[in-house]
Amino acid sequence: MRIIITGGTGFIGRHVVRLLHHNNHHLLLMVKENTSLFSDLDGITYLKGDLGDIQTHVDTLHSFRPDALVHLAWQGIPDYGVENCKKNLAMGLELFSTAAAVGCKVCVATGSCWEYGREQGMLYERMDIIDKNVFCATKTSLCRIGMQIAKEAGIRFVWLRLFYVYGPEQRSGSLIPTILDTLKKGEAPSIKSPGNKNDFVFVGDVADAILKSLEKDVAGIFNIGSGQATSLYKVVEIISEALGVRINIPLGDGTLDFWADISRAQKELDWKPTVDIKEGIQRMINSTGQEI
Image (cartoon, rainbow, N blue to C red; front, side, top):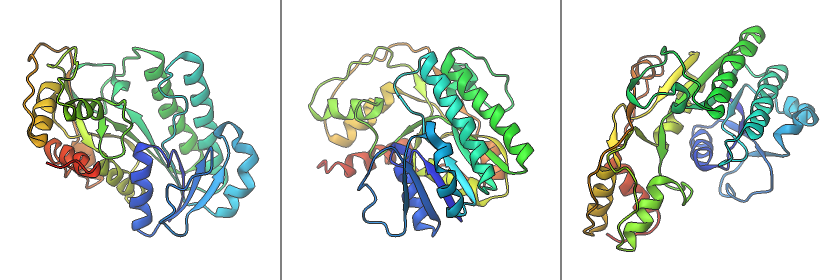
């Protein structure tokens, strides 16, 4: 399959690119600047440019003869304000229309568990959406309008609602890397609500879900998570044990306790998470050369 990818140099994108390349797919990466990130991989095509100028690249995209689009990019993070969200919505919709125009038959895009607007209990795809902020509303709009664009173009559209993705190569300011770096120093991490429970899903499992979304004849919205909630207190405990350090933090209360219903992904994508939180954290430690 010939696949256009946006956001391929990001945290999740790096794992997706390597997995798709390993499975013999031909890739065109849309990048904002030159990169040597995949210098060890042969046969990847690069298209340098901004998604805001997608129309200037139509001829190049068409000549690539793409079968599919994987849209992972969300520019401007951590800016979740109105203007940046409006910009990403406009770029995403134009990208979906362009993908259909240049011959793509499949679009796979990633959303967020925060689209649900809920902080408690199991979340499933058919729940009503609560637009709690502009980012949630924007992601939901991109999904809904993207589906209509795809329907009118006669192409397959898959929207993956990702829960808390973690793993090797995650940016240092993210939750688990921050806890990991602090504990390596023998210090207690500063966590306001250790009792908060999140659904952590390993980045390699997310990449596998994207691969299956491309290769399976499916469409619609799918939750991609571990299917269970893990407290931040437990995360600290797992990392401390793996590093061989003794750090105690107060158990505390939490306001978050939600997790994904992954039954649809299990049934229709033939997908399930294979790396639990303990193994995933160990892989993160190993990837940084940490001796344990």
